[in-house]
Length: 122
Picture 1: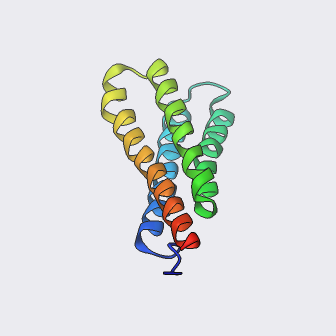
Picture 2: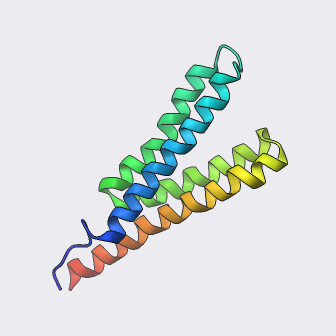
């Protein structure tokens, strides 16, 4: 029972889903802010948002427990912040579904971490 969870389908699902969703959210935000020319701070804010969304996915790639928790925290902050600045229709049809799937990716990382801990102790 010394098999590692790393490299298994569950591990790769958590990694790929987290990174893909992070890049998708960052791309959407950058397109929305830069394409619509939202002002002189659009590019710096877009770069900051890119780092904020991709960083948890990168951390979770190697440290599932820390990265998964980081993804859940950032996901909640993202949903809370978006609820303030985005209209209700966009929030319900874009932000909320994305936040749920991103949270599921964070939970997958926590599950992988838990399985890895069990296998290490066995």
